[in-house]
Amino acid sequence: MSVINVSEGGVQCIDTQREYIRKIAWAYHKAGLNVLPLAEGKKHPPFGLKWKKFGEERMSDAEWEYLFSAHDPVHGIGLVTGKGSGNAEAIDIDTKNDPGEKVFNLFRESIKDLPVFQNLIKTKTRNGGRHLIYRSPEIDGSKKLSRAEGVVEAAIETRGKNAFLVLPPTAGYSFLEGTDLSNIQTISAEDR
Image (cartoon, rainbow, N blue to C red; front, side):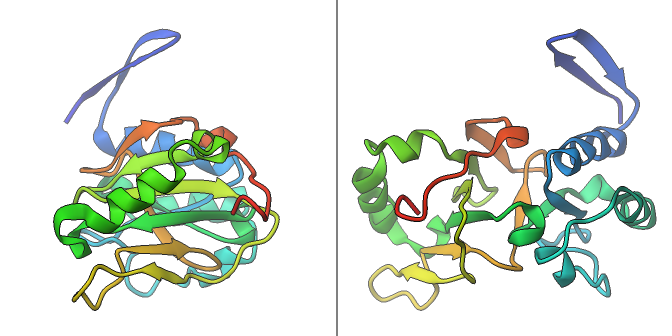
C-alpha cells in the first residue's frame, strides 16, 4: 500500500506503510525514545523479544536496526517507558474500564487548567482512551490510580519504569495535541 506524506518540505511519496512506520520509529529513536515494533494484532512487542532491558538502558542504533529488521513494524510501534527512554512516563486512561467516562471526566476537569497539562503529549487510543506522555526526573513503576465504581480494572494508571505503551502511527492511535515526540516535556516531580 502506498502512502503519501505531506510535510513542511512538501509532498513526499513513501512506498509502503511499513517504510512509513519505520521512518517514524527511527525519528522517535533519534529523539531518545526506546521504541519497538508490535506483534501482529497485539499491544505488545513480538513474543520472545527480550525488551525489558530497554526500560533501563538506552537502545543503540545497531540494536534498533536489528529489531526493526528482524520484526515487521507494519503492525505498529510502542514505547518502552522508563530510564532508557529518558525517564519517559505516561498516564494511561482506559475509558473501556470507565462506563460513562465518569472517572475520565473528573480527572480531566481537575487537571485541564493546570499549566503542566499544556506541556503533555496527548494521544488517543483505538479504544477511545488517552495517553498523556511526559518525562520527569523521578518516575516510578506502573501504578493503578483510579477505578470506576464496580469495575475491577483500572480506569487510570501510570506506565512507568519498564512498561510499554502503543504510539501513533499505529492503526487506531492518533495525536490529540503536542504531536512532537522529539520534544517530550520534562515536568517537575511536584507536577508529576
